[in-house]
Image 1 (tube, rainbow, N blue to C red):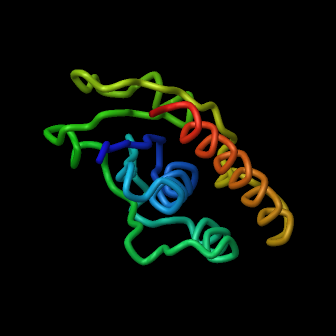
Image 2: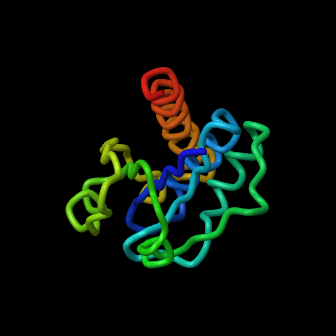
Length: 137
């Protein structure tokens, strides 16, 4: 089973969505992990809500530093924001992929307006994960 590490800055939204989606859609083929350059220490509550709406489990998700994985064999590293791409440590050997995704944590407005942004980003992540599964063997 290949290990895929999703990286972003805070490890509270985009990378968490990607981890949950790949573990669900790619089970038995991939183990998805996620981490951040400057982890917030929590998974954003609206990320949890969005994942629950999609029927995805969240109990194993937690915000963590990419330092946890520096000595772990990673097959594929996917950065999901520009900041993580620029400051990403070098993992020897893995395939490196970049997905530029909007940060839903920066959404402004009412709770419903923020949820619309989270749902939109989730949809974008879902499309990327599905394409990844179709393209990478």
